[in-house]
Amino acid sequence: MGCACGTAKGGKTAGCNNNGACGTGGCNKMNVFDWLSNMEMPTEERFNIVEVRFKNGRKEFHKNTERLNLTTGDPVIVEVPNGHHLGYVSMQGELVRLQMQKKKIADDNEIKKIYRIAQQKDLDKYEEVKKRELPTLYRTREIIRDLKLGMKLSDIEYQADNTKATFFYSADDRVDFRELIKLLAAEFKIRVEMRQISLRQEAGRLGGIGVCGRELCCSTWLGEFKNVATSAARYQNLSLNPSKLSGQCGRLKCCLNYELETYIDALEDIPKVEGPLLTEKGEATLQKTDIFRKIMWFGFREENTWYPLNVARVNEILQLNREGKKPANLDKDVIEEKAPVAALNSDLQQMDQKYKSKSKKKKKKKKGPGAEGSGASQPNQQQPKNPNQNPNRQGGGQQQQNRGQGQQQNQNQNRNRGGGNPNQNRGGNQNRGGNQGGQNRGNHNRGGNPPTQDPNATKPPAQE
Image (cartoon, rainbow, N blue to C red; front, top):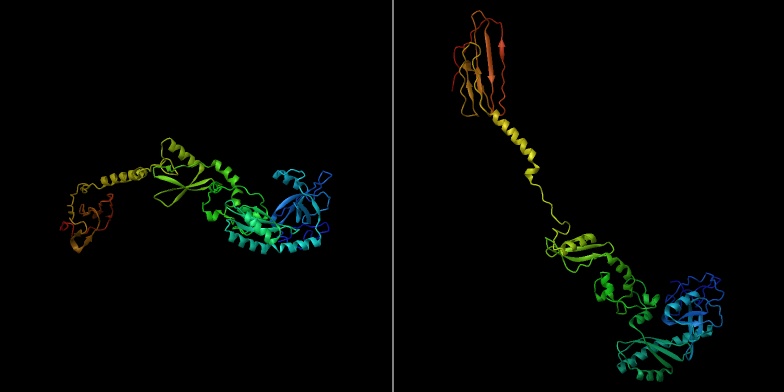
């Protein structure tokens, strides 16, 4: 860490002159950045009260009656009751005026003055006095243990003139330490002052590292301790676990108050859900609330799933419940009815009925073909009973086989007109099926060849 003792006009380190290795209790204890130090104030005279820091960040105000040219970090000898003490300048100028107004400290004769800037012999003497603090602390704790007093001694501060020592302790109840003062004064030959401090102040004097990884706020910059209640954790939706909400002092963390006002402002738009939301699916209980995103999660008892809802939807469901109504579920008020399948496929059904009726009409049996002209018609071949096997035999060893799914007829006609006329042979193959009743006619052969005699003309076709 860099030294915070301040710099002189020439750019050299002022104050303790240890260049970051201060022996004054730490350069980072209750440091203050004077952002008005390089600004010229409109007033002709500078404010003559200076803030002086002592051991472990304890600060007091002293008057600069001698008009000393002081710099932040300079060691000074100040007036204290019944003696003098050594401290370091922490702040001066108009910022001190603002601090006094904030702490409501009046500018009167009760404020002690600054004697002079400390010299090297003063610093050496103070270092010798500080060496007595640790042995005195251990011995005093033994005496307290022997007297069986319900108090905890945390720190001792010797005055620079070695005439007085201040004992800082913490206790839950009132402690009668009159006998303790007599024993301490007789053993250490000094004037004894007992000062009770709170647990927060004790943690600030001892210092340490917080769970955030930084130095404790109370030991670096936080000088005033405000009351921290458990409601601050409830507003921020934090788990009410004492081990997580407590700091090193054993009390609630001071940082719980840092963002409390922001959370309170954001909670104004969040509805208060005192009970479960009533739906036709069941009762939905509030599980979690995201304050800044304004999203609330609800869950049913029978399910392990949480459903996120925005604030507007939650207000709608709460209004319906007040009116005695229940939405279908958390997302919709009414479930849409699905259209039946028959209505969706009605056009396909109509097409099926249309083509079905046409196929029935075409499946009707048609009559056999009659004789054309004056010639006699030849007898028709009977239809076989088995549709899969239709043997049809004619004279001359000719055999025809026709396989189909409907009725089949084969007809051969041979007509001979006149002796001198050419032979006219008309043949027709007619196929009638069960699909659409198609008809095929053909194979008409007319020629002028000499008349020939067909051996099968006078014989009817064989029937089986």
